Amino acid sequence: MYLQDSWYVAAWANEIADKPLGRIILGEPIVLLRDPNGVPHALEDRCCHRKVRLSGGKVIGDRLQCPYHGLEYNFDGACVRVPGQSRVPPAATIRKYAVVERWQLIWIWMGDPDKADETSIPNWWQMDHPEWRVPKGNLLHVSCNYELLIDNLLDLSHVTYVHASSIGTQEVGDVAASVSKISDGVRSTRWIFCCPPAPFHTKVAGITSPIDRWQISDAVVPCFVLLDLGAAPAGTGAEQGDRSKALEFRVFNAAVPETESTTHYFFAHARRFQLENPVVDKIFANDFVNVFLEDKAMLDEQQRMMDLDPGEFRIDINADAAGLQFRRLLKRRIESAPERTSVNS
Image 1 (cartoon, rainbow, N blue to C red):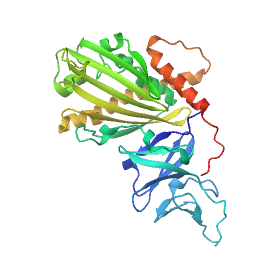
Image 2: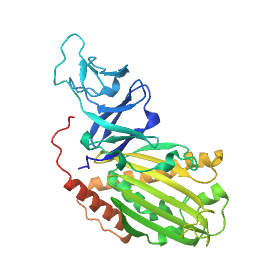
Image 3: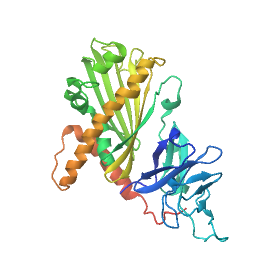
Image 4: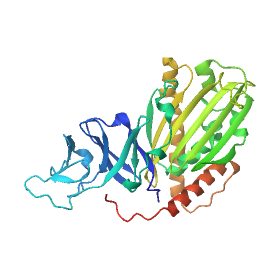
């Protein structure tokens, strides 16, 4: 089950150009496209005639043409032309979704369009701010349930073991995180004081002396996780708010369900240091993708092993506290949501 009345990320804005883009979100086929003015739209990716995916068709002016029999739809989802006949059946419509383009992303409201509230879109302002650098947005297809991915982002102790060659050190796994509530979500906070720098810190800034390091994960219903990460020379006051000497960056994460066992993973890094350094750009654009591929391999395998015996007992440990709290919150939100009676708008 999913939370329907909510925003999800449907695509990076630059994924949608002249051709329609098909994507399955919450088990529903969606076609994303732009009108002649460049405004994004989202429709049901399924022709009302013989259910062919409309994303295989083409945009003709202000219409989307089905690739099978040529039926044409306007951007409100109404069929306005059926080749070979003058009358269009009144019921020839497909669902239209509310969409917003913001923070270099296309956001889609999967529930009742009349309830779509743009103010509830996550405020990822660093994505478009001149004091922050975002080299590239990324998308991975992960073969796991989206809640497993959120677990992974809330418990960053795994960097010690999964990412030892890049961002991990032994000290991260040895320090427990604190968990607290935030608006519509959960925060996991870990500070590691006077510890050795990770290989990443040395690579991007030549740091070899001890650092104070932080990992703050804010997970917000239904599937968004903002990571506030950084490192500063030990004892320079980063914990008290002085980040003037820090390597500071954010990681924006959207774990968007495709199906119950597959996820569209959108992520991007924004940094506030060495903004015009192309070498650092390359590290963030390439090396960090490899870090997330390490996560993907672990999550794919986790889902595969769970599927072999879905009822097998699993234990929880202290490091799971944030993920468990988030799961309970999400479950309550889904169960308290009104039942959707119609998919048409």
